[in-house]
Image (cartoon, rainbow, N blue to C red; front, side, top):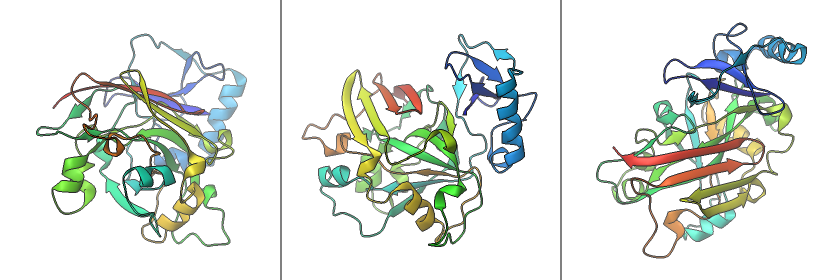
Length: 286
């Protein structure tokens, strides 16, 4: 299923994209929202599947209606740095011997077509297309004999926007360059795990003002999705509604020759992952 939330910010209603990909179906008669509580309830998901199969879900108008992030009340956004071989090489970083973990605040999450704000004082706002893993079951100390993907509810596109000067040149941790307002567009859909049989076989692409900048595959991940869920669960408990951003392939502005083409107000970024949809954001000054 492709779950989504539509409507004005703070007033989104739960919806489902039809199998034919052309109509939105209203889920508000079945569930209150798409959040961690829903994802942790197999019976609720089964009710949605049954209603979809029966054709019982009313059509929602879509023209001129905003698409919000597909997940409400995100718990935490756990991010993995330098998780693609080609991205580590382009930035001159050594390949990590263990996954690099940092956090983004949940309030950085916005809709897939919302405006993204270039922070005040920014000179190095950068793009990063990523596969987002949405957690559907409480995962703590996932064992070597367990299937980590059993804790995954589904997948989405995440745009991990970064301000590189804040991140790298201002001291301390990466968090200053990762948590600016609007710095995590998510969606348009939360695609349930059964529709993504192999998360290591997805192509990711990103365009800036129509120019293809990133074109990679999750097969190039240093730590695959299953290993990331297992690894993160050893350091923090993952709850339904948490998100893991799994890293970005080569092609970011940071990895380009001087003058690096960092984002400015007026730029348009489009992001796509196989089977998970497409995003589009226009950037403006905060």
